[in-house]
Length: 127
Image (cartoon, rainbow, N blue to C red):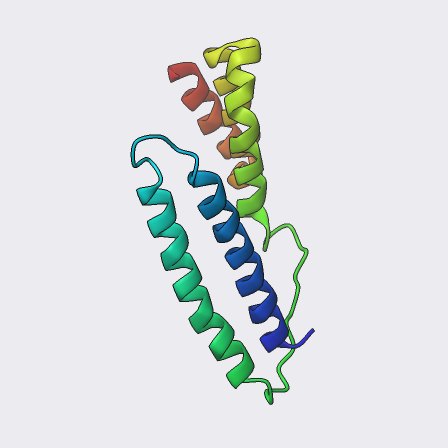
């Protein structure tokens, strides 16, 4: 997929989300719509620059490269764990959820050797 097309799709996606937030925030009471509409307006304004840049560089032959390896996407696994962590607090309790979150996160992040597991155990015990 050409780079200009990925830029254009990103800009259109962000503009559509910003427009949705703009429309939904119309129903907020007592001027509660001002900050969401300001941020949506700024997002649309910045994305127009992205669209302009995308269609300005249409002649570029560069292709977008997608890397699905674990090393390239590790931050998304940690983000997914963080998103799962919050509802887990209500289901099993803060300390139990924190124990599992720290264990899994450190296993993904830096526990590749026995020393890492030892430091992970120390971290969990002190927590």
